[in-house]
Length: 204
Image (cartoon, rainbow, N blue to C red; front, side, top):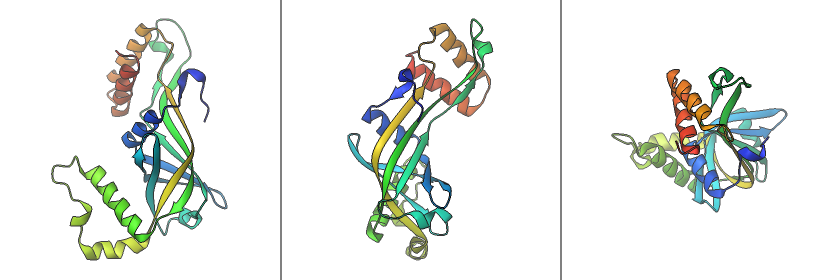
């Protein structure tokens, strides 16, 4: 990952919270060509010591490369936005602001029991905010019995983690406020989310 010094993020707490907040990730592996799958990936453990877990459909082309010890790159991305230089007080260069975490990891295949426990955790994580949540144990047993043989669960043991938060660091507060105002005027949900991230970074 390209990380200019002022945008680098290396704190374990940042990684852990970022992954929980942006769990829909891109899993990249090298087969006969580079392959990528978009899947939910969650951490298990604590900020200082965690594994990642997920699962994949067996008919996915990438599944055949899910082997013990195989290398994978998992990419987590937060809100991002194009920033026009026309928003600044003085002429400058337009840019793109974003945040992301990259995890290089080793694959470990889950047992059937581990897969079921992981699915329970995953469903609970995403269902908890629903008005009438449907948890794993409430899914019909036959449906689960038919579905589980069709997927492969796996752990991801982090080997290296890198983070970046490019949020207009070193810019004048007036320019940052101008950027936030323009992003919110666009009426785009992603731009508004990024404006909120800018406000947090700059304590505005």
